[in-house]
Each structure stands twice: as structure tokens, then as C-alpha cells.
Image: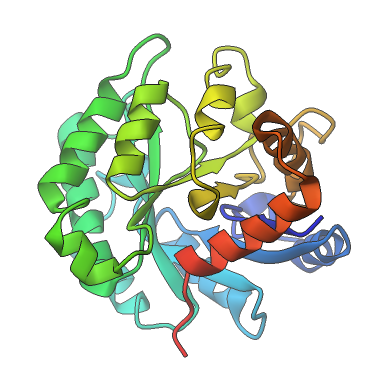
Length: 273
């Protein structure tokens, strides 16, 4: 089965001593593409260093909602400058997290807006983290409102991206109508090991509604281990567990689904030249 990992934090401290070995294990498992997202300035810089000379790794640069209040104008200018690097194929990880609230809601919204504006300006899709407290959907609804207000799903988005997805719902979580509304805006959807957790059962229904060309899988390593993967540290090679589960939910042949994953990744994340 051909595999991709659309969201893997190989730049996290958990991989500081053996990233090369982890990549080798991923290649043996069949992974052909990996996107490494940053969440603040140092993590974006580490992602770019990891990608140097390794064509199967692409990078996303931006500011996570948890770090929204920490990255000032100077740090943001540094992130903007990184988008010129040919390895940078996306903006983020950004979004809204109204569950843990490590940054205030106002700081998160301001940060999201600058990340979305950068995505539109560069033609590099936004990687969107979105979490509400259990049983709530305020972050999902606010995210959709911000996407619409920024021009996603409209002329600005079409001018910047053409038919490509302008944003990706990373580690998708939320009700089916939220996913459907994001699809109407042209977004892609990425499924992680979160789908196996209690309270996330609705993801099985959501993945059946996503067009093949806009469906991705991820590990969010070193986090969100799927069943059968070590809980202490998830790795990109375990994305196969999630990929086979998604294919099963959709009733897709595994090999055909794997080929569709690679095609969707390449259509969404484009390396210049």
C-alpha cells in the first residue's frame, strides 16, 4: 500500500536523537511523502533543516493557536520570510483551540487571520487545527466563519489556488456538517489516530463523504497513536493503520486508496519547480 503522512512533527524534541532512523523505518513501511509542520519560529526552522536534501519531506510554516500570544511581529516576519524556501508547501499549523486555551481567544483569532492571509498571498494551503471542549463546536463554527471572511471558497481562494484545496482540516474532529461545510469551501480533510478515540466516532461517517482527491491521512506524530502503535511515541510508519481503517470505512480497495492518497498529497502540496 502506498502511503503518505500529511502531518508529522519530526521537528519535535521526541525525534531529536533519531529522526534519520525514523525516516528510514517510514520508507521501509512504504511512505513516499511526509509533511513536517512547524508551530512557532524555532520549530519551523527545525523543519526546514530536516527537509534539506530530502525531497520526500515538505514543510509547513506558521503559528499554532497555542503559541498565538507568544509570536510577535519580529517572529512573524521571520516566518513570512521562510515561505520563499522551496521546501515550504503550506502555512501553519494554525487554527483555533477553544479546549485548552493556552492563548486567549482574541490572540488565536488574530493569529489565524494572519496565517490565512499568508496562505492566500503565497498560494500555499493553510493547515488547520481545530478543537472545542467535549460536546461543543464553538471552535469549528468560528473557524468556518473566519475562512469565509478571509475569502476561502470565493474568488480570492480560486485566484490563489485554482482547483487545489486552499486549506486542510488537520486531524479532523467535529460534526459531519462541519466537515461538509469545509468541503464546500474547497478544503481537504486529513484523518489521524484521533479517529479511534472515544467521542470521535463520527469521523467514520465523515470520511465516507470526502472526495478521494481531497482526503489525506496523517500521524500527527509523536502524538495521537492509533491502535497497535506505541503510545509513548507515534511515528510516521504507523500511518498505515489509519490509512487501512479509512479505506475500510469507505469500502475502497487498499491499493487503489493508497494511490489516491499520494495523488491527493501531490495535488495539495506543491513544491515549486
